[in-house]
Image (cartoon, rainbow, N blue to C red; front, side, top):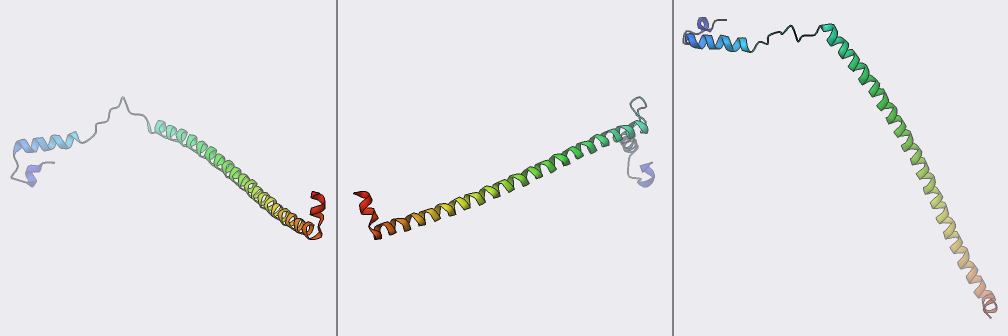
Length: 115
């Protein structure tokens, strides 16, 4: 591509420099370092299979963690219910104890048991 044909204001040195710059930006193919497309494809497929296996492992681990979370949530709920039941039973016993104390006072049994 000659720039002098497009622009008569440029110099011959500039045209040479421009041509060299354009050529420097084009990568040269080094036959010694190139691998065939088949090798690239095989490498890609191998890596793809490895990643698929890793994804499957991670999904299985995630499912196990989700199951563990569900089980622990159920256990926590069971403990909360047990705690609430124990608290209700304790409150009921306190009420029964107060009623018993009151009835002992009114019937006079307290005085005889203390004497």
